[in-house]
Length: 270
Image (cartoon, rainbow, N blue to C red; front, side, top):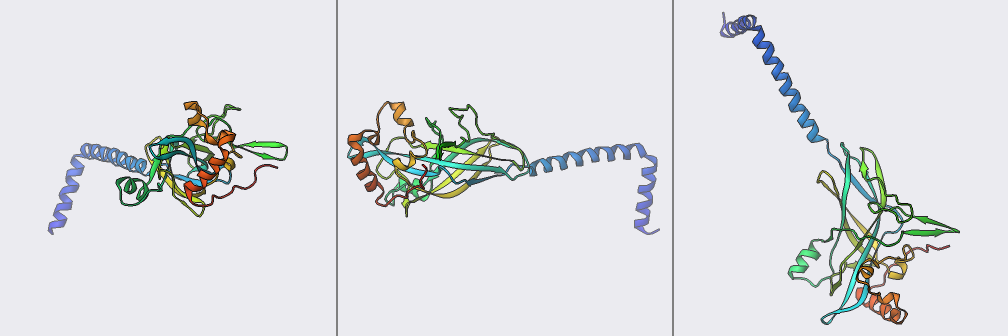
């Protein structure tokens, strides 16, 4: 017999004489193969969040706070974003945190410039806004839902657990702590470039970049009368805009702060 035929005959004879061993080997091989395929299948099943903006209270505002740091006037930046988050992946997960980044308006070639202008300076924690985002339509008032914060009026919040194919939407709000100098977003043609990062409970981050209008505090408060007031309330201090004597000073300073004309929001009252 040829060598291959001899080998096949020997294997067949051994299999006939050891059927129990062969059955057990096949059984364990099937278990291992199923276990391995299950692991690889699970590894392929991941959430993937698509982050988009919805028309509404989406804007950025930098405003003076009436204090000094050395020779610098101090200011704050507040940002509102009306987001929609959709799970287009292959596994369910929940929204754990939302953060926003922007390029600081710093002069070049310093460590702070490298970190926050070439890269992104991040606000990693949302601020609790003191009132609802809203718009007046005729005699009625439309309230915008919050994404992660609970509504003061209804006590409800958006659904943040997303099955595959599900989406949710709501407003997120940020206030930058007291800052000075160029520690505010770069404004070009009345707009600010932002990067939004949504982290899910499995630790995966999902990000998107947007351009939003930079508006005055007065325009921002057409959507929310408490816009920019969270830190002021915590520190129990009035903002210059809230004191009539300082309103002219605020207007002049706000224009000088950016060196550009801010965008005007669409009229939101009837």
